Length: 234
Ligand SMILES: Nc1ncnc2c1ncn2[C@@H]1O[C@H](COP(=O)(O)OP(=O)(O)OP(=O)(O)O)[C@@H](O)[C@H]1O
Ligand SMILES: [Mg+2]
Image (cartoon, rainbow, N blue to C red; front, top):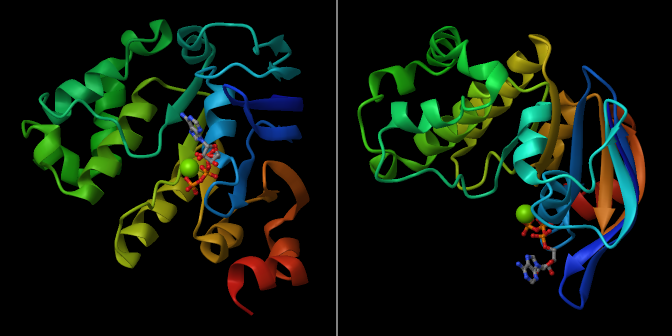
């Protein structure tokens, strides 16, 4: 579904990603793990075309996507739930969600999709008239995920959905990711909760200093000595 090939990218003169290649098959739940500053969010931004790669190419469903504007990426069916949520704080929860459904294929199904996400997140139904900026951290994270789902994506990019959440809420978010994956959505997730995410994903890639250094199924990587040492403290 998504193919990323030999990508170099960075910010100005500073190169962050080096020859990054990976793929996501339709229906897969893929996780990218790596330490702070490894370049995980940068990969997400490259896929969404928020930054342009300096080398390499990307394809989504056989269409080349490394030269198209970011609104076009959304139209193709890729939703990006960015790190730090980025909701509109002065708008209500419901208004934030409605903004998620601007994609043409999503607009006509807005009512039905709204019902689906409210079903997934009962808390958002209760709080739909509340200003997003006054919601708790966990509630804002739910709202950001729900807004991504409102675009009816084929694939969703989650950048550290558990950031700043309690262990309990983190569990909830991962359970939910698993649930929407079971409903057919393809997921690419970046996470620092390495143990938990490797346990729920299909496959994973390990990123070190902007390079992909390991790849395997979640179970393989959980049992990998380097992963154990670097991320699991074993
Ligand atoms: N807008 C920017 N301008 C300049 N450098 C940046 C910018 N954004 C990120 N970087 C640098 O690029 C490198 C990779 O950052 P990135 O945000 O991709 O890391 P990450 O793996 O997502 O880390 P974290 O786990 O802390 O979120 C870091 O060294 C960071 O300082
Ligand atoms: Mg990041």
